[in-house]
Structures are given as C-alpha cells and as structure tokens.
Length: 258
Ligand SMILES: Nc1ncnc2c1ncn2[C@@H]1O[C@H](COP(=O)(O)OP(=O)(O)OP(=O)(O)O)[C@@H](O)[C@H]1O
Image 1 (cartoon, rainbow, N blue to C red):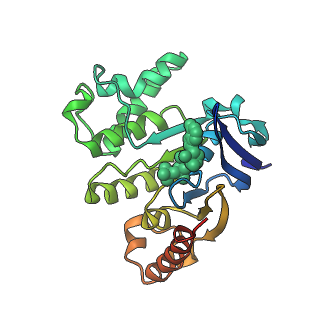
Image 2 (cartoon, rainbow, N blue to C red):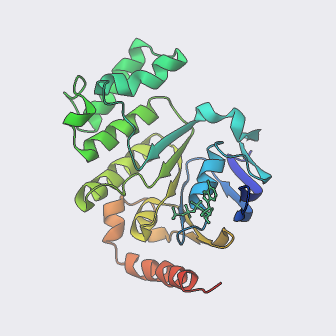
C-alpha cells in the first residue's frame, strides 16, 4: 500500500483577471518513514504543493492520498511545523502543548506524562508553567515540535521551520528534529531554501522547476550520508560534491529566462 501518493496534480490559482499556473503534472510517492525535501527557485510551487498535501488547497486536477484515502479525510493524521511557532501567548507551555489533544477530547494523564517526558528529552524541563514570551526562538520551536508530536501524526509537514533561527540554533534544531522523527519512525516533507539542510536531513530531495512548477530532478541522498546526523552530514567528505551537483542544477533553473 502506498503511504503518500501524489498523482497527476495540476494547480492553477484563478483571480478575476488572472490565472497563475502554479503546478503542472506532479506525480510523487513518499514511503513510510522517509524524509523528503522540496527545494527549488522562488515561486516554483513548493508551498502550494505542501498546502495541497495538507488538504488546505484542493488541486485543480489530480489526487493526493494517504494510505489510499483522500488526504482531505486524513487531516488528523497530519502534523505541522512552520517558520512561525504559532504558540498562544496567553497560554503556558504545557497548555500550548496539550491544547490540540484537549480540543479533540483526547487529553489523558498518560499524554500529560508523555508531554513532560518530551520536554525533558528536548532539554526543556521546568518551562511547563512559563509563557512563550519567556522562551528563546529555538526553545519555542522545540515546544512547537512537541505539540505536533503529541497528537501522533503519521506525516509531518515542515515549511521552513528553521529559517527564522540563528545559524547555530538552526543546526542544533536540525539534529534534534531529525533524531526525534527517526526515533518515532515518522515520515516528513520539508520545504526549504537551504540546500545544506535538505541534504543533511533527507533521504530524497525533489528539485522543482518553475513556470509552471514541476518536478525537475529527484536526487537520492548518497549512501555514505544517509542515516548520519545532520551536523555530521555537513562535515562529511561526500557532502561538498553532492552540494555542488544540486547547486549547479539550481543555478541553471534560476538563470533560465522564460
Ligand atoms: N494565493 C495565491 N493566489 C495567486 N497566486 C498564488 C497564490 N499563492 C501562490 N501563488 C503563485 O503560485 C506560484 C507558486 O507559488 P508558491 O508560493 O507555491 O511557490 P514557492 O516555491 O513556495 O515560493 P517561495 O520559495 O518564494 O516561497 C507563484 O507564481 C505564486 O506567485
């Protein structure tokens, strides 16, 4: 059975005066437990495709299924991590983490204990009663990750979740998110502008071309880099060559005059 299947997806944004052909003929499969990144020039449709996979946009043509069921019926199986953490400022960290479960009527004592255990694992012990404004950006993103994981999503959609962080925090959080998702056996799609981030976290990298957005090349991350922690990948001898290969393809796409 396919885990995530994107089949012949086309999307056009219509407004009264214009039609923007954002995506053309996208067919992709993502396997369970896989980490896939979407990269490509600005405007190539990465966010549009992620929004379609999230069931937030209905594509003009084509289908997206999770476990062979239409994605719009599977929204409870999805989790998100975005550039902004969207924590509620007037709620404590614990309340923020448990809010989704409370709304769904699934808040149990076991889940509360799990939240505390995750806070401990992510170096956030003691912040339960703090408010988001008292935490750094990196800490808030870790809270956002716990809030996502606690609802046990099958598929995580990560839309540039590290791009607002300083470089050191970003590298540390890449390691933490990677190891956490791998230990839970989660499947993830990451949208990023950072080739290094895509290489260091992914099993496969989908490079999109633009006008209209389409799959240009699918890169399999080379074996010596797979399974290593993101920070180790960035320091591996096989990393620069692979980086250059992707960089050159991206340059060609960005210098194309349509
Ligand atoms: N709501 C919208 N209405 C009309 N056009 C849109 C809308 N959202 C995106 N577009 C257009 O669709 C195309 C794809 O946009 P999208 O944001 O998906 O690309 P992207 O690859 O995520 O870009 P970036 O890397 O800059 O975030 C672009 O031409 C964009 O202008």
